[in-house]
Amino acid sequence: MSETAKATARSAFVAHFGRDPQGIAFAPGRVNLIGDHVDYQDGLVLPMPVREGTAVARRARDDGQVRVLAKDMGAEDAFAVAAPDKPSQPDWRSYVRGMVALMAEEDVGIGADLVIAGDLPRGSGLSSSASLCVALGRALLAASEQEMVITRLARIAQRVEHDYAGVACGIMDQMAVAACEPGHALLLDCRDLSHRSVALPKGWHVSVHDSGVTRQLVDGAYNERRSTCETVAEKLGVASLRDAELSMLDNADLSEREHKRARHVISEIARVQKAADVLEAGDIERFGGLLQASHASLRDNFEVSLPAIDAVVEELSEQIGPQGGARMTGAGFGGSIVAVSDKSLSEGMPVFP
Ligand code: GLA
Image (tube, rainbow, N blue to C red; front, side, top):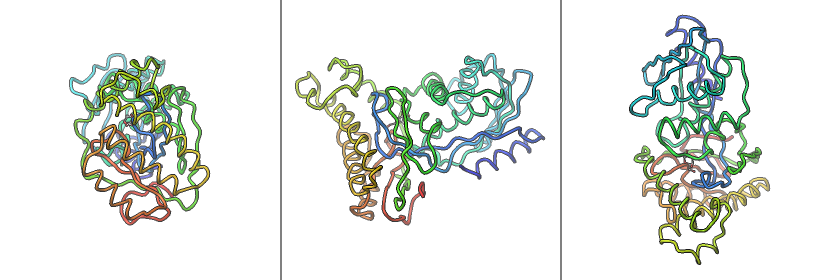
């Protein structure tokens, strides 16, 4: 857990509000090892936490007001718990106001002084917004001396993305951020949110590498991919592509684009199941092969990679050799590449060990 973000939140709280916080909540970012663009089709995913994340220092108020400083932005906000308007353009305040409003609907309505500080690189696709929402939720729970099951907190954080930020995301990021254990991958079934932690074997190295492209135009392209998958599921007569098989695609009335999108989702879900098995067996060579296949499918079938990402994946794959692999991670269109290797790589942000 990131001591840097927590120390920054604490000292900024004292400087801004003139007294000590009552506590500091934290939630990490996540990197997805495998299973992208399948969570909103009830698929399986295998994320793990990064060390960096978001810290929220808090002190309860008894006047129903929220005052918040976003330390990294140098920006402030103030509003009443009972009536937080949505900002006209989504920005960091949307997440704060959204979490406060939706937690209040769940009887966690409490005024608070809050300071947010994070050390996740921005625009890197490591779920900084899910990390912010879950850390805020934890701070509000602590301020009101309540507890909540992880799945409920994750669902609230997901609703904030949908209703306050306009992104029709799945549930992977919020569940990963809320439930992942350090040094473990989380095998999550997005259909029923059942999950279990799988320890990374000794000798495996996981790192995150920057594509050099900040994520752009993601929301429109993301929502479009999601709705294409929903159309295909409807044409196939299944509730989601989790229930579909590759053989069903050949007899269905699908455009070439629909065919490719569905091919990715169905094959990726199967790869995640295999990846969890070979992770448990400690077979890094087969795990690496699955990462390479996942990347190829995201690039060619789902078309969410970029030449800059492909170039980094290729470079890393050459460096790693057969004992491991690399792939784009997250929504795509920029962001990060995840690498798994039997040796520590000279560049990148270490995630494990
Ligand atoms: C984003 C979304 C997730 C998931 C990934 C792609 O991170 O927030 O729900 O769909 O993209 O796997």
